[in-house]
Picture 1 (tube, chains in turn blue, red):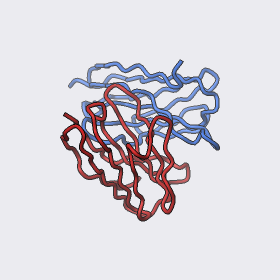
Picture 2 (tube, one colour):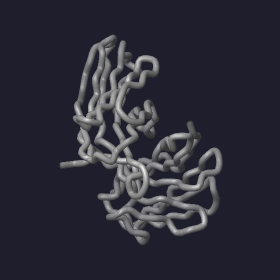
Picture 3 (cartoon, chains in turn red, orange):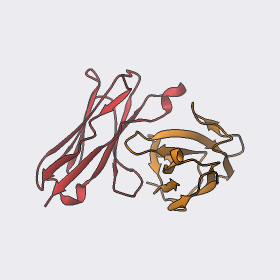
Length: 113
Length: 114
């Protein structure tokens, strides 16, 4: 079992839809959870950074962490064509080798006008 | 956030040659990181570059293949040596900053080896 599993998609939605992107993980030492957005031919851009379980909202984006289920989600409300990108989840623990980021493979999202 | 620049942005190279990728950041950092992003694969950490000491390589990556320099606190280079088509990938420079040690990435260098 890979440490982080992420459905690669592709995911295609109409403009204005609510998008749900998900990752599961197996390492219970992970405590910090991130979502990155990567446009084509660009580097990953940090979108959301969360610690522990719960929700964090930033504009149209909500990150959700459920540590008991080892499951994280990113919700995008009122999706726009400019949200079309690959979304990467990433996570890390603290201390020792757990400080290193472990990434999912990314989900390719297309928002159609 | 962070301002990270990389040169070159892309290159097409012949098998057996070497390419050096440069990374410049906007302010001093202790650690810089080099990642590889192969098509359809997760970002993979190659090595951590500390100023004033040898780089620390991850399992599967060796200094002879990926020598790294870190001459000061705002600059690092990664060389991909004796390239083969399997080295075709995006190479990304990265740093950590902020209260939560958030990780930021450069724009990447897209390498194609023929």
